[in-house]
Picture 1: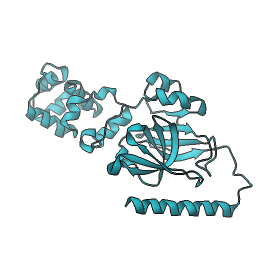
Picture 2 (picture 1 turned 135 degrees about the vertical axis):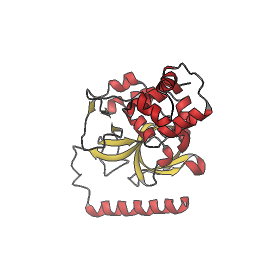
Picture 3 (picture 1 turned 90 degrees about the vertical axis):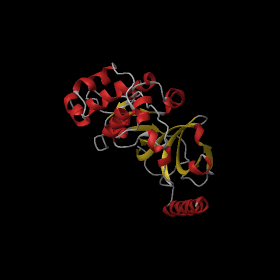
Length: 266
């Protein structure tokens, strides 16, 4: 049971002393200290409820999860009310790195690291070896990672572009028609337009921007990580051989296909 360490960690993250928290919970400071240092190993149900309401997290979270293992990003999500035992999501401990100022880095997964990332995504030692950088224009309280993509399935986003993704903790939040970098068990890293069929049949429908590629489904059990598309970087200029009308025709066809998918899903 992680209750003792968890309530201490949550108190310290709020920058509150034991005196302040004890007063707000209507207990003595010595009683609170006994809970935090583990002298009281079996808190009463009334106290569990009181701590749960105070920190705005579920009793299950306070008791079952070791919050010290979570990144700042995950703790921020928890403190904003995204409690896994309330939302029904499965908690995923994300391997991550921070800079000298304890700010979340943006790790870069280049093509040469894609194969290793498939098996090492949850290994902190592997993640520490990835190149990192900071991008101040992004939200500090969210987690981002950059992936280099390959192939022409997402044209007009060019081959070997770098895609920045925002980490998605709860896969039920995947929005239809939005781009995602998805780490799968079989195919590794893929960049696609996703359609959320988790509640319907426990799958994701993945679609390429390039209409020459057929959409396909993957079971959610094959998914390991999900990153929502934010932006991309590329040093490649658009191909002068691609005519404007050709692109408009492709996007028009894609728009119709997506609309048909939406209709069938509804």
